[in-house]
Length: 220
Image (cartoon, rainbow, N blue to C red):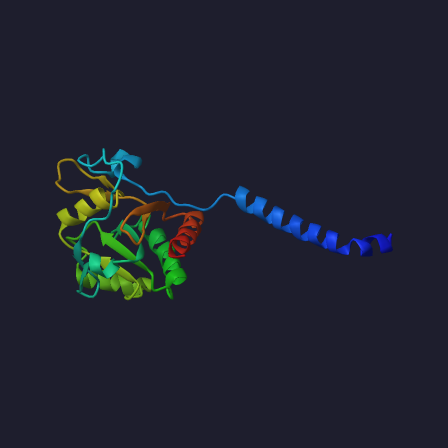
């Protein structure tokens, strides 16, 4: 028997290599590749989208913006150009979901701290009370790293417009009050081409883990 295997050793060696290559190719072909959808207004809960764009089904991107951050610096689309970033909406005195969301976004900050391709962007929905000094105090309290994470305030109409026409992430508030907003628990993932690539529940650990994995995928 040993002589038989020795005699045909080259054949069996070639058969082994062929088997390994074939199994690898089958595994690669059958294994689904990871992909992320590109979200447009028509794909999202209409409650979160301005009525004027609910019909849009393709080519949606984040509009240009200009707000002021926790250091009094004007932040625009240029600061996020070519970046993957996570956007959300909050207010500093929120006592319900905001603390949990902020804690979880701090965890995201830790995960992307040394990745120059990724940033964070948080918009207050109460700009009338969340002034620059208030945002700075909130940033210091929560360990915000200025180079990675901007907390921004500005004109309420502009924030409202970004929330509902770009990020597709904020509900209407009281109908009788113009530009009233009710923020949601959503973290919004935006890619390097300013496209919305995912929504994540900012209060849930499993969604935060998924968000970090999807950030890494977009950075590949």
